[in-house]
Length: 102
Image (cartoon, rainbow, N blue to C red; front, side, top):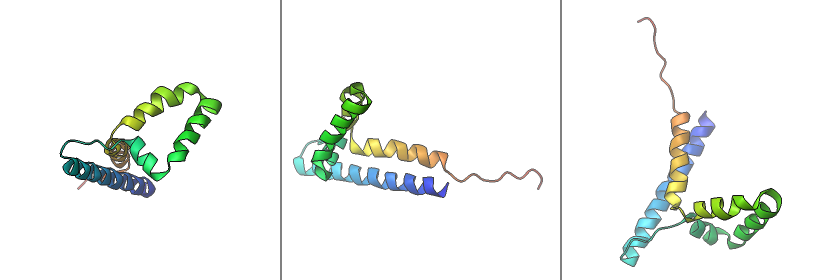
C-alpha cells in the first residue's frame, strides 16, 4: 500500500507541475494555451512516439494507436496524470480502525 501511495503522490506532483507549466505558458502567451500529453512526450523523446505507433500497429492492433492513443495524446497533461493519481490515492488511503467496544 505504501508503494501505491508513493506512485499516487508522484503522479499528483506531475499533474500539479503540468498544470503550473500550462498556466505559465498561458500567461506568457496572453491567451489560454493547453499543454497536451503529446507535446510533453515530444519534448522528452520525439522519436519514441513513432516507435510506439509502429509497435502498436504492427504487433498489437492498429485500432489501439489511431483513435485511442492519439485521443489521449491530445488531452491536457495535468488531466492524464491527475485522474489516475486521485484514483490511486483513494484506493491506497489509510483506513481507520473501527473500535467495536470502547
